[in-house]
Length: 127
Image (cartoon, rainbow, N blue to C red; front, side):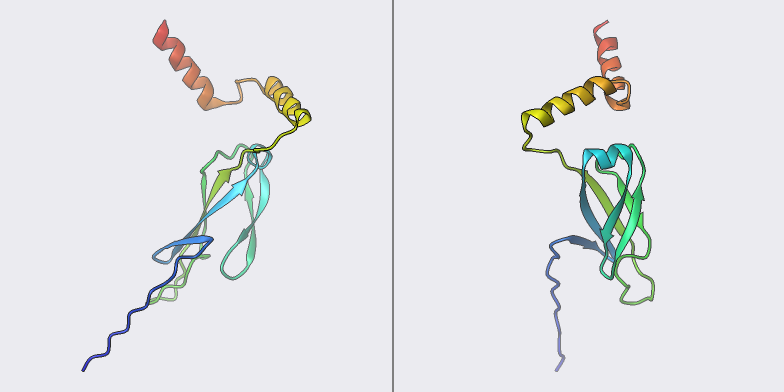
């Protein structure tokens, strides 16, 4: 008779896999997103350094070529897609809250392109 072997791959706690490509959600701070930073990205084989630019927006996806899984029928490796997820602090003391409010006053709304265009659209709607 015939022998059938079924292989089930358990989901990984860190990576999601689609074909030969891997997907990773990586939390970053507001400071890292605003000023840019060198991230240490864990791959299946090693940790690699990846520079994110200043002004990186939440949920931006960066592609690391050849850092995915080797194909079953080819020697080519897939890619690793890293989605940066902005982590907002949850426990702030009064000094930290004051520092954030001061920064907000210094920055203003001109630095926020999406917020500025939204406020302009709302003004146009009501005028």
